[in-house]
Structures are given as C-alpha cells and as structure tokens.
Amino acid sequence: MLIDIVEVKPLSEYKLFLRFEDGTSGEIDIAAIVVFKGIFKKLADKEYFSKVKLNPDFGTICWDNAADLSPCALYKNLKH
Image (cartoon, rainbow, N blue to C red):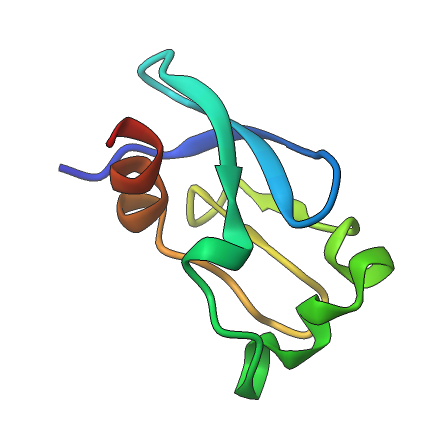
C-alpha cells in the first residue's frame, strides 16, 4: 500500500516531521536510516538537509540534488 507524504517540516539535526495522507504523523530521524554517501552525501550538510521539499507528484520528500526517499520506508520507520 502506497501512502503519500502530504507535509514535511525540518526539525533539529537530521529529524523531520512528516504527515501522511492517512493522518499518520510524527518525527523521524533520517540519519538513523540513511547513510550519507553517494546521492545522499550532500544531506550531511545540515543547512542543505533543511531544504527538504515535498514532491506531491510522487508523494514523497526530496532535495534539489534529486535525492528522495521511499514514502513506504519512511512510513514503516515512523510507525515502528
């Protein structure tokens, strides 16, 4: 089941507040699930990380360097 992200807000460090279309919401620590290498290397810069955007076409979050994360994986990590 694919559940789109409908809201994202950067918090402190590498944490984000996410809200999904089913109303599920909460805080997730991206550093706990992403290794900052390859396309994710730029995300290690906290200022760059905080420029996270919502991509409503794909129902996920992304950054200007084309890095994005699976909404399913984020939902799973938020729920458990």
